[in-house]
Image 1 (cartoon, rainbow, N blue to C red):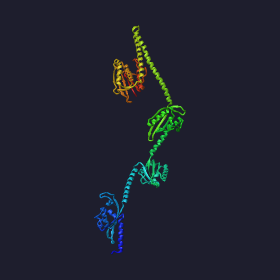
Image 2 (cartoon, helix red, strand yellow):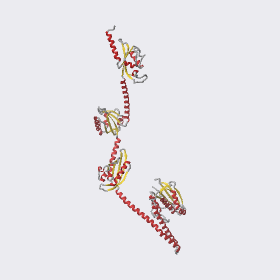
Image 3 (spheres, rainbow, N blue to C red):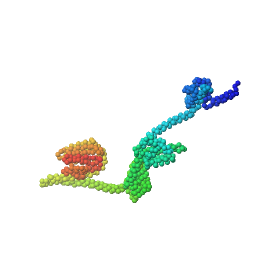
Image 4 (cartoon, rainbow, N blue to C red):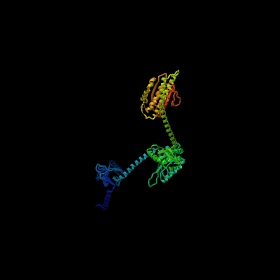
Length: 635
């Protein structure tokens, strides 16, 4: 019969097993070298994948344990040295609710393998203690992933900062530099071993050093960022303007302990800004020196600057003139149209120009040309305008216009008089011609020079008749100077003119060649073109050389300077005396060959027609060899 103490021992052992059986940690005893299952609590049962027959070896029923873990258990048993397996992954067991063949989350356990020994330190088995550390392991893995991502981002940030054309830096709350990018060493020429905190202030220009140190200290003390410019010595000893900007690293509610920033070279931009400032000052000085009303306006059309002469001319200050100053100075009748035109130009960007009467400080309205243009640059859109006093020129133009109108009227009256006189004188000329013919038929003279005298009278009457006809034709042609233009085939008009001159061509035996392929068409008035060709061809047929048959060549071409069409008419006649070095000008009734009948109006009329169309006539000639006329139809 068992003793009372043995009974109590078994009771305590039973209580201990009950306690261990329901612990959240897995506990199992493995007995003997075969590692047969002994005590296995419920947690370990689950971990091993279900039923573990007591007395069966671990090798026969490994459950969910991996082969390498079984090998380690055997080595621990044989060596007698305890071992702890950290975060060993275990597949999900069927008791976790995962269907056979299904996939569940992997769980991690810390496994403590403790050899069991008897009183003589002989191996009796193993005690396996398993603690679920899945949450800790997953947290560790997430931390590891975050650390890798952090290192990747840090490497990317370093690449960005070290390849950007800027010096990046980090300083602590005491102003000590924690980091500076390699660009600082490239810029300053300092070796990487230089004491950054000691050398940086010495590289600042002496005139800027105290200001920079104070502003950066004040910013750090206030926990705010900074932005200021100063001169930093470059590797070649030249001081260059740089812009330093930094912001604090905030971790509320604590005060910032780091400032991160960048240093950017702005030397060229600063010098450009200085040049622009000086240029603007010079332009303002120039604008104030000009005796014109100079002003500028915003993109919306509101005036924001007037030069000094504007105040002197108008007697008003900039504030009194306001953003629409010049419009308010116009004649009241012209203000509304001028304002509408200005609004249209501001909206469309067109140049503004107009002639208006503007009030001076004495109340007198004077004519002004107002012009404005829009300029677009890096500073945006702006308008630049000027009001130019043209009152004197305008009044002078009115006087000249009145005189021109009077001269035009007088000229028309003279043309009418000449045309009427030439027409009215024809009848007395006809009467004289009839009386002379009758006298020649009936009267006789006993004078040896009778025939010579009669020939002279007949020649004088013929010359008077020709002069009257040419005067009438000249007036008629001048009236047709304003005839409408049209596209004309030059060869067709030349043929038409030659048809009218066929009698002279036959009488002189002239050989006329025409080559107008280079410029076959001409935009001109038909009557004017016929008149030019008729006068030049009739002169070539009139002033022929007595010892050789006339040869006349007409050729068209395009001007090398302007690309406009021109025509040359070359003959081998008597030629002319032209003054060298002076532009050829032909005057009315000017004649070079008095022995040849004519009134001296043909070339003058050609010159008038060409001038009225923007062209001109050039001539080159050699006496007794011939003349070449070049007709420039248009400039």
